[in-house]
Length: 97
Image (spheres, rainbow, N blue to C red):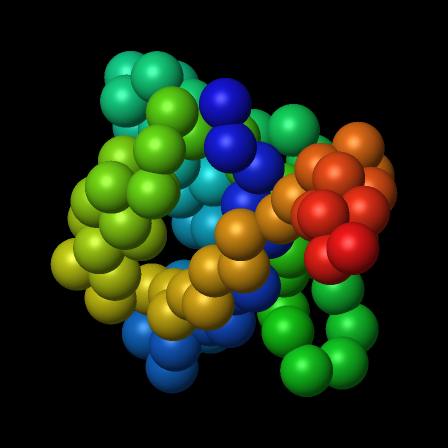
């Protein structure tokens, strides 16, 4: 499984309906689970992003499809970072020679 960090901001619509946000989060968790992935962590944040999620998915295409499906709801905008675990980081750096 590949790990991704998803930076999430509410749209104006999402902010107006913030009380429904927990239900939307539950639906997003189910959607990703149905696609073979999972949420590993979720945070409400202060600063540049409203929320941050750490998720796993089988591949980039699954995560892209998930992100697009979230976008169609009109409540959030996302930015996704592909994350490499520490072991992969060490291997990548070691491969530099």
